Image (cartoon, rainbow, N blue to C red; front, top):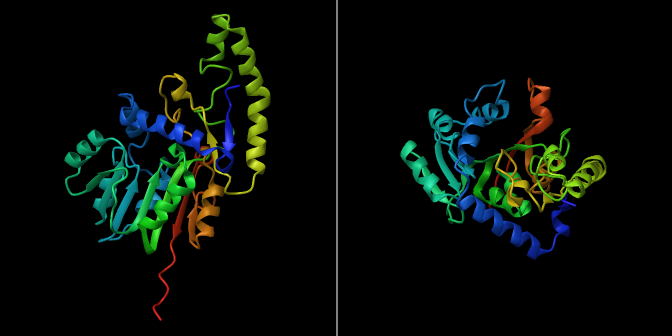
Length: 288
């Protein structure tokens, strides 16, 4: 069976570490189309197509400092700078970061793992959380990077409450299309595919929806690591859900400023597959 979706806490450390190593290798040398696809999908911030991005950018005031974790091509950067903020981006690919630095000379860019001895007014994560093997640790890093009284903004897919499984989930023994399996007379693979689609995937989704917030479901066999050609989110390992993010931030004592569930004017089609949370970290307690 291809479907291997489990709660983060229930997965042995060695399995998570192996998955993280595989992903790190993938991100150090991603397919040529990887960042092109990401850039195209995020091109142009308009309220109709990118309501969450637009809302996040609207929070920027002159002089604010912004950290984006998993910045990719840094398409957020010019919007931050246009509103008088200063931008710092962190990502895996040093070649990409060098390209970003040339495009945005007023910003700063650092590879993942760099220790930044500062905190920021806004810490943003845009479509990165779904690629994280250890979601609680990643969210904790966002929290620690945020100044007291600052904002944390997260945009990611809604994989659990959405009508369709994540693109990284495949069925049967291989990530090939069902028609291709029948054409090649791979009947065992095709039968497993049908069983996954009709029985196993719906059972998992029902269990995931019923699970208490904070489950952080992980896909241990994403399509792209099983030989599939890269398409958007075929590398997703964390089955992101708005309820889990809100739960984590509330547990930390954050004020939930806004979520995709209460942001007005967002189309139903966007809400089916995407989620957003903006939270404020508490001010530091007054010194005694």
